[in-house]
Amino acid sequence: MTNSDIEIKNFLFTKEFQNIDTNIVVEELRNKGYFSFSKAFNINAINAIEKDATKSKLNLNNNEMCGVHAETQYHLTNLLSVSKTFFDFATSNFVFDVCRKYLGSEFRLKALRYYETYGGHHMQWHTDNKTDRGFAHIPGIIIIFYISDVEDGQFQYVEGSHLWSGEKAYSDYSEEFINKEYKDKVRDFKLPSGSMVIYNTYGIHRAKPVFKNSFVRKSVFAQVDTEINDGEPIILNSKFITKMSSDVGMFLGFGKPSNYIAYPSTSINSLPFTRNVLGIFLKYIIYRFMRKVYDLCPLFLKYIIKKIIRK
Image (cartoon, rainbow, N blue to C red):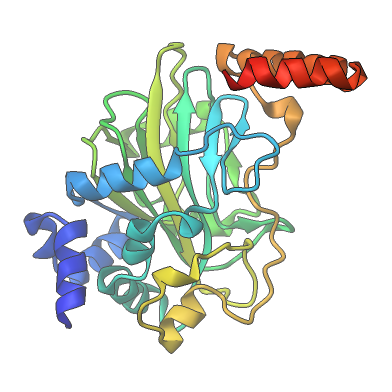
């Protein structure tokens, strides 16, 4: 391990997490379907990712990277274009070691996002072993970590469900079914900022619904699986790659198709009606109206207006 690798490791992870044996991670993934660790990330790393991911939360018609709003969630899927900290984590020895031991020699970063979930969002119990074309038998893992403290609306997982859900030809499960058949197997992850959960994509899970308007949960999501020949498109800032390798090329899908539809699918209609959104559109309407008036003014009046504005 080079000095640069050690510096990155020390910046990303707490001393307690640095001592974790990846064999333990893999064993828990195989037996329970998940592995969790409280406060795996240093606070500076968490703050850096949040800052990078929220610089442009609402930026219409601006030629820079920004996120999207899907009703009760905010997403930045192009995290690799703005966050060197996330890139360092995604391509870290820890992530690659866990993937090799659990998934085998070939694996690809299939999807990623920083996201914020607000009150009123409801997520159904489901598995993640599906594609745009429906249910799929593709071994994989999800890594999530909390950017904010999570005391409500926490991630929930049905322990052991990864062992049998693949026998079903569907991915969604009702709350009634889970409560009736597996209530005693539901595991809650109320954890502080910087905590990490890794789980098998075949496992049944959800984020517990919260209906308080003031609620916000901030997290990062990364999905890795063994299907290396397709995935969601990735926009990558090339300056983040200070050391290229065949593993990095495989992991990021270099030279491979990226035909999956990026999640979430959004439009202007999925933009929530908030005070900030209203303010942006009011400024736009006022500006366009005043600009039209200015364009219709005679030259002498335009000259006077310019002099007033410059003062």
